[in-house]
Image (cartoon, rainbow over all chains, first blue to last red):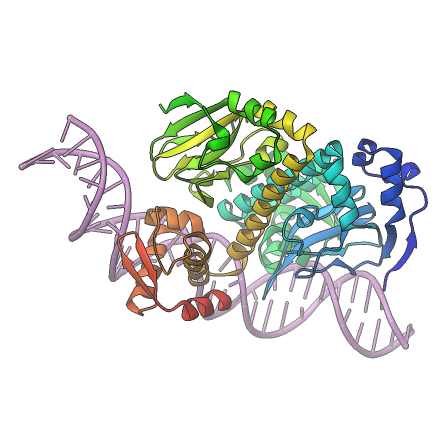
Length: 230
Length: 230
DNA sequence: GTACAACATTGATATATAGCAATGATATAT
DNA sequence: ATATATCATTGCTATATATCAATGTTGTAC
């Protein structure tokens, strides 16, 4: 299992959350005191769908996938990179995770006692406000996702996904996606076989370049057109 | 367009929000002062996808649907009944509605200046906490919805929807759903024709009763089995 | 360095679901 | 009261997508 150490100096942490700036030193120390830095290996679960929420999870370093486990297949909702809270809304809702989060690469997660975060949120409105904003943005993201799945067909969805990673996540025409083909499929809500087929179709047409898990967006405009038409 | 009047006495309002109890009288008066009670007729839009969020919307009386407008079809995310905030997360996110809300029957909506709510939320942590909880619950609801659409097929989804309305919304084996068949379809993410087909299939099999828009769950256990199997 | 498992690819086939068309039933407006 | 639009229903057909199967590829453990 994952190794862990007690947090030493949250204030000086290069990966710290912006929301910490909303807290007084005393409160940062409170968080620090209950904060365990846990190292997860690639593939390990950070939290598990259906279990109780006991900690707030902050991804300090690495990258993780947040996905819903279904009977036959999974649906990946988000890829989250470092310096972000993961799964905040479970903290304020029914306190049960309705998704699983697992590490896409070796990652460092700060686990802070849920009640301490909630208590802080209850007395520090600036802090809670930041958390609420993060939850809202996350909700809006899922709204966009649900409509994509519902409205667009495979080619459009995949075009969307490629553009999203290039422009919003990696901010580069070339990027290395830490997803297997199956995970790209689970993220785009389609079968793995069709994912491969369409990716190679785009490659053959010169729209993208593929080198293993490295993708290059060669003709973003065409991709955008495909994404728009659905 | 909709008629409106100035709110007179929020504290005594029979439809008031629970979150008001978290506010001091001064603050309730502040809300009341900027609160317009607007009457919407059946079918009218209460807010429109793509427009700026200028007001917090509280559904005092009536029922509405919250849906995402797509190119070819809409996706209804929620049916909301009286005494609930509708669309809170847009207030804390990017301040643009990413959905449209329209009235399913003649409804009364309290429209409160968005900045006043935000200012109150910024100084009253108990109030913000209530709002955050509501947003989180709404997010979890959408998570369940997205997974249903992704994992189950038509029969399972429709069984789910019927059980949900019977058990969670109307809390009765018999209920009158203020949805057309097309709206049931948009809520279940399927075509209108298949909605009709499957509903009548269930009726023929004696699983449900249908009388226009009044539904009766006759064999909930069978419905539950269908919903589980997908 | 070899073996084994996970991953990637491609073609063929099955099927769930959408879309079209025609008709009947209700509701709404004038 | 009559006309008109919306809603509901049913059968037929087209098609997007999943699934199955076979094979190649890459990485990883011993």
